[in-house]
Image 1 (cartoon, rainbow, N blue to C red):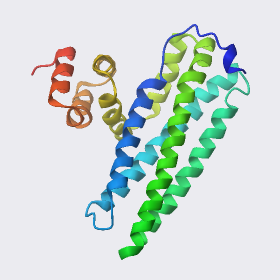
Image 2 (image 1 turned 30 degrees about the vertical axis):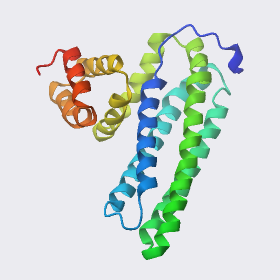
Image 3 (image 1 turned 180 degrees about the horizontal axis):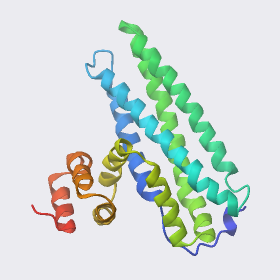
Length: 230
């Protein structure tokens, strides 16, 4: 199916919020990894957080494969071939990065410096590839999806993905999506979360994933928009 033939009818965009969050996480991780060296007492935590970021990215691909790609193939057979190839390439990158992480963990002394450099550069290539891939999904694949599915159907696909995400992963995702969003979008996303989650769960999201990741002014604006007590 040609990208050029897509004539969007729907407007719902389920790519932008999660992709903004992933971009934020990758940029933060790339900065931390570039600043790490053998004398860094927090190196073990940086590597653990790198693994967590890669696991989040891998999980995102799996959710897209299981829900979005399955639905798209049913309506436009062959339309996901390019996406599947990109996802396969990403998973090869995950394997390469895990190998390099293990080498850094086993290294001692001066041997660690070139290995950290190699890990940083390989991760930077993955970040570049992922940024290009996500942009393609938003600029080329989204119009196809919007031409084939109604807004209600796109929202149902998004809900199907959210329902598959376990609570601990959801906390990590919210901790990136909320600060990466605009002020207006934060209010919208959290209003939807509050409407669909128990009060205790919503409170935990605010306390664990949201407030620690926002500036005082941003959290005050969010609280006002949600009608929460100061």
